[in-house]
Amino acid sequence: MIKLHDKLFKPFLKEEEIQLAVERIAAEIVKDYKDEVPIFVGVLNGAFMFISDLLKNYPHPCEVSFVKLASYRGLISTGIVETLLDLPENLEGRSVIIVEDIIDTGRTLQELVHLFAKTNVKEFKIASLFFKKEIYNGEYSIDYVGIEIPNKFIVGYGLDYKEQGRNLRDVYQLNQSHMINLVLFGKPGAGKGTQAAFLKDQYNLLHISTGDVFRFNIKNNTELGKLAKTFMDKGDLVPDEVTIKMLRDEVEKHPEANGFIFDGFPRTVDQAKALDNLMDSKEMQIDAIIALEANDEELIQRLLERGKISGRTDDQDEDKIRNRFEEYNQKTAPLKEYYETQGKFHSVNGIGAIDEITERLGNVINAIQVEG
Ligand code: AMP
View 1: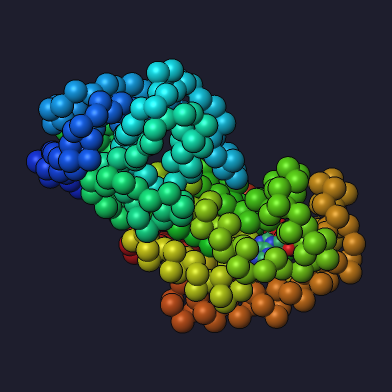
View 2: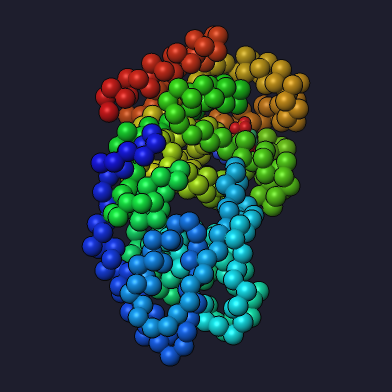
């Protein structure tokens, strides 16, 4: 086990296995390109070690160059925003092999393909040492793949966790056995967002509020935002298909997280099933569903008060609030039974001072950690 910053990583791939994959890719490229002089373009920083070993195994004339892109990873990823080191200039009529350390969702690759498609290269191919096939959703097929890996967070051989680990000869994966994943459950106004803000700091977790992600998209006028708004304005739930995909994207943006607090998700049995599947696919699990209990009249008062400050239109109108409760009773309440069957449902009194409620939640979480 090794430690980088605050996280532990366990061995995943040995140097020898990596070198075999590098040699194999080099041999495949030799076969395709030995009669011309290709340009290898490494994508910095991650690919520096791979491209170095790859070229040591490429015995014919070739050239080498680099590009560097910066990807923006905010609440909703917009993909790549900046080219930090631009394409080499001598590409006209040449065959280019783009050398990547890892391809996961394919967002960076899409941008690279876009960049190269604008040049007048003869052709370009993609070589990636690692490939997370199960989460790749790009259209471009990868020409040379070293090793297919599951969707784990890995470091070493050029890949980093917060810039550390690139120098390691072997590859390591994040050790997730100490992760905690929580669902905060309860009607609108129960205090899920307020409490999540405290718990995330206390337990070093990542807070995902589907309502906040929708509001962020509405504010930025994205397609997702425009769609969600039509439902949210009435106090209806956004369709499962849209919400589930969005949630999965949010989780996948943070493979380094210590655990998640899901707030406002799941809200239907289908969402709960999708969440279980997502956790399974990542060898993670939901540890507890903690419900914040409060009566409707108290909640309506809280929401109307919040509506005056936050400006949320769905909080300002009692009819819309009642409709959200109606949605909750019909679609969300059945989740209690779903999670009770799994032995994961816990209930906490959501009325009282904010810090008292945080303490009640902390007691439940600590008890789970002791059991785990
Ligand atoms: P919230 O901020 O959690 O109160 O959510 C505000 C609104 O966003 C809800 O009334 C729904 O319209 C929408 N929304 C948030 N989370 C979900 C979800 N898991 N499923 C469907 N709609 C959601």
